[in-house]
Image (cartoon, rainbow, N blue to C red; front, side, top):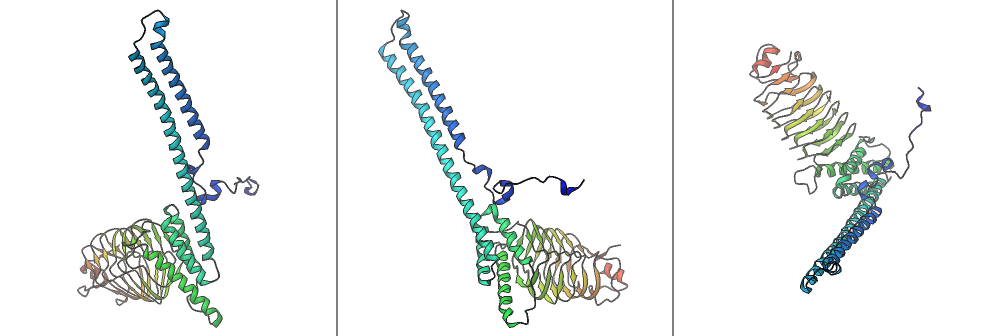
Length: 392
């Protein structure tokens, strides 16, 4: 079947489906028609109750005399009259309460609808600022988008997505040779560094408004500097897939990974210094599958692995990667799919209560993969003596 000839569903611009998350929620729809029916129903009920009370009053007061019976004493007539009036007044009071409640409910929905409208206007303004040619305006847009994320829980993930998307856009690490373009480059770098700081500050434990558990998509982003010190990745997906760390210093000191899926899959580490010093992996997944450590230094100093899955199926081809003081408490540190080509991977000072999974074939050059000094013999027995478990 030719798909080009298939009729496509039409969407009205103002419909909730077309506007997506920017549309007005269904629960904010005006209830005026339903309010009228409610009032009419209660008025009918009040009329029925009043009629029944009047009929009962007539029956108890007038009917006996009409039928030739004994007349009802005056005191009893007064009591019956009081009861009937109380019933009628009670029904009227209920009607008044229903009307008052409905008005209050309608007023609250109108107020919430105004808040949603204001949030959407703030979002549009911040998004336009982030696309402005002037770096100062883009900086203002970054702060405005972060502030909106704090004030708008329902749209927080979207605001975070916009900030992450800015970092994914093209960025030249090296400043241009033309003097008239260098100012623009430095301005762009300031905007990117500000966005990284804004995201990082909202991931710390002491953040006034935390963005913990939200997805962070840095796929293909370029990092030439920045810091995520003390960040908590407790849930969601934190994706550095295909990211490039080059020419600067990136700090992830004291990061806690306690349930999130954190991926550095196919990332590149080139001429940079990256530190995970003091980080803790307690749950979730940390993956470096296919990552390329080409040059520079990457330190996992004093990192504690107490749970979760840790995959270092990376390509080590020039970087200096150290695990000095790292402590492995639970689960294997998985290098089974790693490729050791050049550079240095230092595992000599790991405090291991568990196994470190090594590939079946270790590198011919023992200087590439440094195992504990106590290990002697061929590569496989060296790994076994070191307390590591080679994978077959």
